Each structure stands twice: as structure tokens, then as C-alpha cells.
Image 1 (cartoon, rainbow, N blue to C red):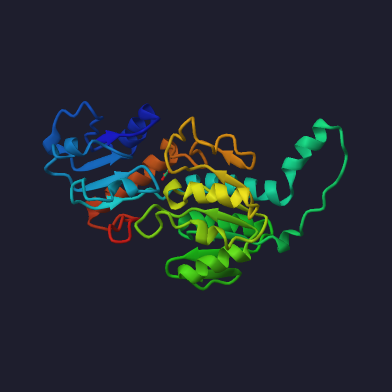
Image 2 (image 1 turned 60 degrees about the horizontal axis):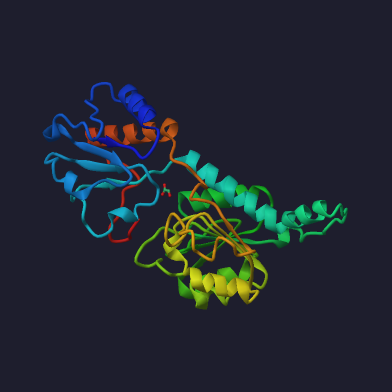
Length: 303
Ligand code: GLV
């Protein structure tokens, strides 16, 4: 059962090519619900899911899978989307904003408008550490790209880690330490019980003065009212939000006209049929061979 969010024709075409022996039924035209073994979607009507008694797995088209928390979907394995192309787009997005604020590129717009030629000496790249909150496949790729540009990389995870060239942090104390030790903080945390509202006034107070916050994982991890207060108090110099507590961001949100907030509409990385559909087909093949698909959603961890 296929119900992609976008690029419907491409999804159908690629899955039909990759899985020629399978009967791909495009929702809502499901002609034989009993034959449905695999469901491919981002979110889907949980009532409708009850129509497929022989469902073996759900293959999500998204990297973040908080939509499955709460147990409303059938109790079958759920596979997340781990698409290096999406991680690459997100790394480009994060790198863009890190460089933008590190090199103070925003100030040149004003200078150009005023016909002013005044070089601003930015900190050396090696003196501009970037903290990455969430260091799974996406966070790691962002770290690799920024390290390639010469930025020192700090990483925060639940369990910590050890890796040459990366300073690892873990736990609550580690969170306060990493934001204090970084000039830009990139948040790619998933939305789980543990991360919901994690970036609150207490954590924001620990950010290095004048640092930049770039959020492209899930809006629920950040308390927006606390973020605005931190910006207004001058703790943070800017925030870039690709994700917000409520999406779409309501038109009356004060975030829209905050002079130091940049908003993009959840577009730091896209699920693209061209790369994502073959990954889903490969996971279906794995399940058919009796091998574990990956990455598997773990309901206890929430991602
Ligand atoms: C998009 O936000 C995703 O999780 O893939």
C-alpha cells in the first residue's frame, strides 16, 4: 500500500521498477486489502490501517517517526527513512547558516545597501566550534561536512561516544556544557519523550553569549517562548528555525517578524522518490529474505 506525501507518480514508477513481482496498490485504490503486506507512507489514517490483516511492516518515508508514538498504528515493525541524499541536503543547509553567521554575511547586505566597503574580520574557523545535538546518521553527516570546512565539532547524544576529532557530550550536564562550548548549535534531535521541550530557558541560559541556534530536526524539542526570551536578552544573536512547535507556523506567531529569527518551512532536506524509493524497495527485499530492515524504529527510544 503506497501513500506518499508528494511525487506520487515517481514513487509508483520507481517501486514498480524495483519490485516488478509485487502488486503495488496506490492508496486509496486498494483493490485487495488482504494482499497488502507492506505499507509505505509518512502519516496515514490509523482506522484505514485496520483493513490490512496481513500487514508485515510499515516503511516510513520520513527520517523522523514521532507519528508512530502512542501505538495507534498496527503492531508491526516500522522502518525509518535513512537517505544519505536527505542527510546531504540537511548538511548543506546547516553549513550554509553556520558560515552565514560565522562570517557575518548578513551584515554585508546592509553595507551593500549603504554602498559601504568595510571588511569585517570574522573569528578563525578553528575558533568557531559547532555543537550538534543528535549525532545519528544526519547529525554525523552534518559534522563531517562542517569538519571538512575546518570547524571544530562537538556532538551531544544520549549515550555519548568516542571518536577522533569530535568532542562528545552526553546527559543533562553534557547538554549544558556543549551549548556553552559552541558558537553555533545545530539541533537535529528527534521528537521523543526525552527530547520534547529539552531546549528550554535553563539550557538556553547556558548558550555561549552571541551564539547562533539552528534547528532542523523537530520543533517540539525547543520551547519557542524561551527561545524568543533568550534572543531578546541577547544571549543568542540569531536563531534559524526550519521546524517549529506548530507547523505550518501560524501567521500570528511573533517568530515571523522577530528581527533575529530566520524561518524556513521545514525544507532543510526533502524525501525524494528517486533516492528514497529504492531504499524502501531494498528494505522490503530484506524483510522478504528474513533479514532485518534498517533503521528499525524502536518504540522505547522513540526513534
Ligand atoms: C522530515 O522531517 C523527515 O523526518 O524526514
